[in-house]
Image 1 (tube, rainbow over the protein chains, first blue to last red):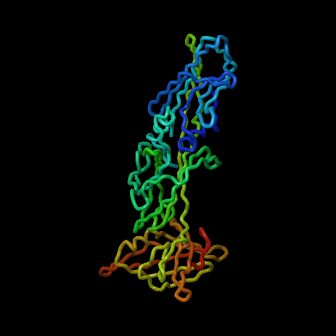
Image 2 (tube, chains in turn brown, green; image 1 turned 90 degrees about the horizontal axis):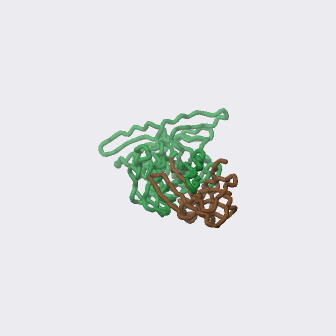
Length: 107
Length: 298
């Protein structure tokens, strides 16, 4: 599977820059079915490069199935700008899933 | 195209980095500088700061998703010159509410109406378009380290910008009662015009005199090499790198101006001095073909 751009949702970013919708950071998410998780977020920036990740521990006592990894922005809801629909990866109890992005802004 | 600056890209990165910056892109500046645009620009080269041309908040900030402007932020501002002399506009830029220069554009000759000259009291509309695009594919890497599974996306987001303007309709320029004007600029001490008629258009030779050199210069910025001829249907055409203007001649009988659109000042125009006077003769050629209908009463 390949990670894909979502151009429709990418447009939300330019709307934010013009103050047309509420500002949001770029957020790393892991999904189980339609439930998204983004715990212990960590963000940093160097020049025009953004790095962000979240650390999501499975403490449910059972194995979960990862359905999607996404880099989101929040407009009226969480919108994926980069999305990876996984091949039903297992998320074993006690394991940590770390979705991470490195995004560079260019001219 | 216009240039997105490094400072602008860094501002964008800050904006999406946990609200490191909360400024939005909503300001437009215009200026007269012609230094080439570069990614290192942090301001206009020579920005205007007064008389209606100072930095202004865009009156229109909207999102466009059209064929011409996909995923685009559009800013528009109409600047009205309250100066008493012509002002040239050679550059513009989009800025954040905190003053960061996001993009800059230097206009080419003839890119703006009236060859980038804005006469006193006239307006110029600046439209800036900032577009977002994915830049290439997303690189995806999955790694496992003990009990931690990392899914890494590496990607680039590109911004580009362009500038558009609304053309000034020269037929809307007003002219002083009893005077002859070209694009609203009075021909000083104009002689009665010597008129040549052609099919669908005319040409005028008008002698002018002034003791103020600027009055001559205000007209001469519109001069250019003009090619004239007749089309296959016999109508007179006139072409030039200059934009068409409007000649308004006062009609003493009708007590109003008669407007002639699609006119060009044929250059070069020689300016002679006589004592404290500047004397020059304008040849103004009308084209049957042009931007708007050839003419009428005003």
